[in-house]
Amino acid sequence: MKKDMQETHADRDFESLPLTVITPNPDGKDYWSDLWRSRELLGLMVWRDIVVRYKQTAMGLSWALVRPLATMLVFSLVFGKLANLPSNGAPYALMVFAGLLPWLFFSAAFSDASNSVVGNANLVSKVYFPRLIIPLSSVLVGLVDFALAMLVYLVMSFFYGLSPGLHVLALPLFLLQLCLLILGCSLSIAALSVWYRDFRHLLPVVLQLGVYLSPVGFASTVVPEKWRLLYAFNPMVGIIDGFRWSLLGDTQPLRMNEIGISCLVTLLLLWSGLRFFRRSEHRFSDAI
Image (cartoon, rainbow, N blue to C red):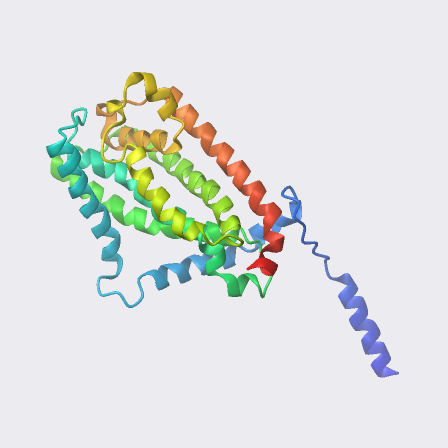
C-alpha cells in the first residue's frame, strides 16, 4: 500500500514538471529561452576552449601577438615598400595593423566556429542543449586574441604618435557587426559540415583568397571608383574601413553608403545562417 502511494506521488511530481518540446521551428520561443538559461554552459565552453587552445604551448598567449605582427611586417614590405601603395597619410604599418585586427579575428573565429559542431560530436550526440551555443562560444573565444592584438596596436599607435581620438568611440559598433558577420557566415557552414566534411578543406582556400579580396594589406581607396560600390558588397570592406576610421581618424576616409551596404549584407547573412542552422540542428545527432 505504501509503495503504491509513493509511486502515485512520484507520478504526480513527474506530471508537474514543465514539458520541453524540441522543435525545428526557428521562431520557437522555447528555444531562445533555453538559450538564455544555458548561458552558464556557454561560459564553461568558452573557458574550456581558451584553456585547450594554449595548453602545452611554450609561448602560450604570445602566439596571439606573433601572428598579427608577422603578417603586418610582410604586408608592409610587399604593399608599402615594394608596391608603394598609398596609406592616406597614416604610417603604413599602422594602417595595415588596423586592417589586420578585424581580419585575423574574422578568419580565426570563422574557421573555428565552422568546424565547432563536428568538433563537439560527442557532446552533440549525447545531451540536448541549444546547439547555437557551440559556434557562439567559438566567436567569443576569438575575442580574447582580438583583445591582445588590440593592446599591441595601442602600443604601436603611441610609438608612431598617432593614438586613437574620439573616433574610437565608434569601434564597439564595428566590432559588434564583425561578431554578427562571423556568426552568420559560420552557422551555415557549421550545419553543412555535419553532412559534408569537404568544407574543412575548402575553408582555408576561401580565407586565403579573402585576405586579398579585402582591403587588409592596402587601403580601399586604391580600388577604382567605378568598382567601389560593387566592392562594398564584401561586408569586410565596410568593417575594415570602419576599424581604420575609428583608430586612425579622418586620415582614413569613410563612406556611409558602403557602410550601409556592409551592414545590410551582414544582417542578411545572419538571418539566413540562423534560419538554416535552426532548421538543421535537430538532425545533427543522427548525422554526425
